[in-house]
Image: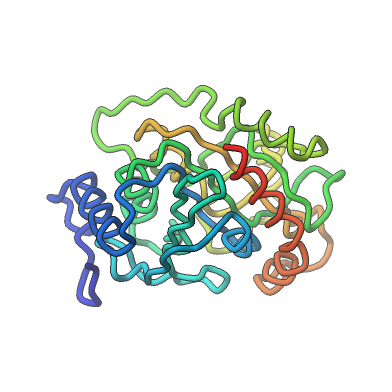
Length: 277
């Protein structure tokens, strides 16, 4: 169990995979579910999807699980939920995300993903709220992540750990999502360090190097998921147009408001996709 005095992941001498295994044991004990099949991280605007996936059997505060801490961001619920789908699949719903800009380091950022893998989940669904670069997109629109550009200058991989990231965001799962909603567009996600929003010049850079979506999460988690052997599906909710494309100032309240307005539609979409996995 985590406490207010420290987190075991902050000790470089510890093995992050052993801590993830301990966290998975906590989840099994607290939920009564020995093995989960799918993991879902809920970003800004996606929270209601957990209610639509199936029957929530147990909800636990994330702080009761080894290595987890309270979310620093409004819009993240700070709980872990075990949900049983109509098909009998167990979904671990992660509402406690640690962002890179909180300054805890990559181990803490990807701990939820490694824990999900240790519970048995073989599919990782990552969602976020983000800024859009494509001018054809509108706030409130969900898009698939086809690839990413990691601009944090960091990695969750330690030492000489070489992981292939070809088809990191599974084409198979993206095609499956489009059977649910054929209108889904997709794009390349650029993870910036944050917490400041990107400047117009940084957005122009992201566009020049092939980016379509800008945000402050997801890429490091996706790398850790691939290292753990998971198949990854990524969704971004375009909460605003990126700086320089949108002419009005950016704000976190805007992100929350856009997520709240889009929540019924995107949550229904996500629940249907999860149901098809």
